[in-house]
Image (cartoon, rainbow, N blue to C red):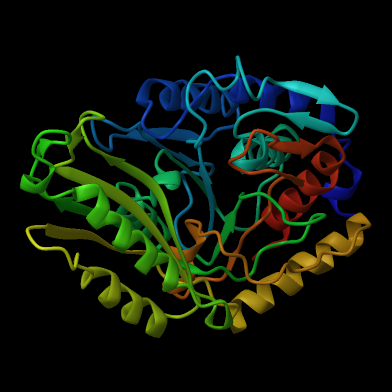
Length: 380
């Protein structure tokens, strides 16, 4: 019988490791925190025969960790993609989202997206190594530090490492009761700035040109671009401007998120966003940004890989179901666009990504660890 079915899974030990990295706060722009997570992960590969390599990104971001689990072997193998960064700011753990266990739920910043799934994949490989077995294909792990910032610094590393691989497994969280992810929308990220003319709001308001008022028009125009029927969403998630309550604001800036199903829509929407300008006299408008992730399409190779995973899940004792196309992007978008069979959503089940009720389900640790181990051992 297959080893991933017979080896006992110590869910409590795996949960303890998950807790260890959840309690290291690691928002994307907190390089020190991300690197502490990296150091903990690196320690988990001690004694397995794997070789760990760290790669610098930028001064503002954490490093990337590459782990070659069978360094003596070459040729196409399996790439496991995980990210160490989260969206929750430092202090969340001590405030709005303390680590706590309530029945089957365990709460904490980044526990669902995606520190839980990250540790499941590490645990799956450790189980193979500790049993002294060798996988049919060489396995490489890549732990990145800026996925929540659209992977601008790590994309080239991901694509370089993925080139020539036969399969990619992504440990992003499962969806809606354990569903796997086989299709995602693409993503665009833009920054829009308006510049006007400052003036005293009480004494000389007519001499000023409000950058905030001008930006308000642009925000409404962006919201109006959303098209549910075509799967296009637009969102202004951040806004900053002005210097004082009694001053006509000279500058304003927003950050815009775009999601789309296909590259035709992407190119159309990118053109529309970059053409935005204020209709107000005396206002300068500047737009920067681009499409950061291509869409993740469920094409033939993805379908075949899903079928392999579903067969393994059936042996374990559960039915693996594919979720509908999700609006969130991941690093799997890059590898699918390269034509590499990719499965996403292999992490823990739970809910609340990026919120103050983010949690994972303890009951998902055993079956999802077995699934990851089964894929590592069976894919050839």
